Image (cartoon, rainbow, N blue to C red; front, side, top):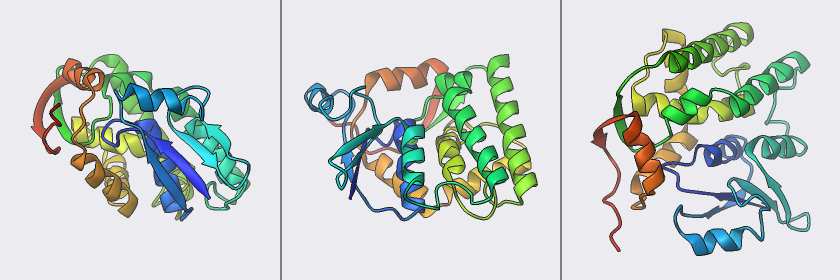
Length: 234
């Protein structure tokens, strides 16, 4: 049995990756949520995860082995499930490259368009660095969809490559990013997944607000809609 430690669903893009991957691969796990700003629970979490960051997968059937970082979690799961990466070696190599590029790149997209599922934002500006990230993103998606036939990045099945871009689908929705037709259709396909809908619905119900994340959003643009539950008052 696995336990997956995640943070607020509204904000935590890193948590979303293994969560949606395990849901789509039909891998059972217990969800353990930590709330940003709850210092006590995060301090105790450090006894489980040495980095003190989410996500972290606990393999309770293997002496409570802790596997941290979303890419490492995907590779660990792949040792036990054939649904994580494509079976074809060429497709698998491409998928791993795409996931690794998302994991280490697209810094302007990630930093300027921080994930906040429940709001809609009009960007103050579209700097050239963000345009380059969006352009590269579309080129990568179009290559995968064309080369492997879709509807997902490396063929008919959802894999870890798609999971790594799942947070981008929420970012595209939040910030109204303009995409070419194939990329926009791919984003819609991800958002329509039952697992993504489940995550989104749970994110909207969260009453928690984390001020650093809220300020990140406000520094990037103006909030034009907020669909989240009312803020929790203390």
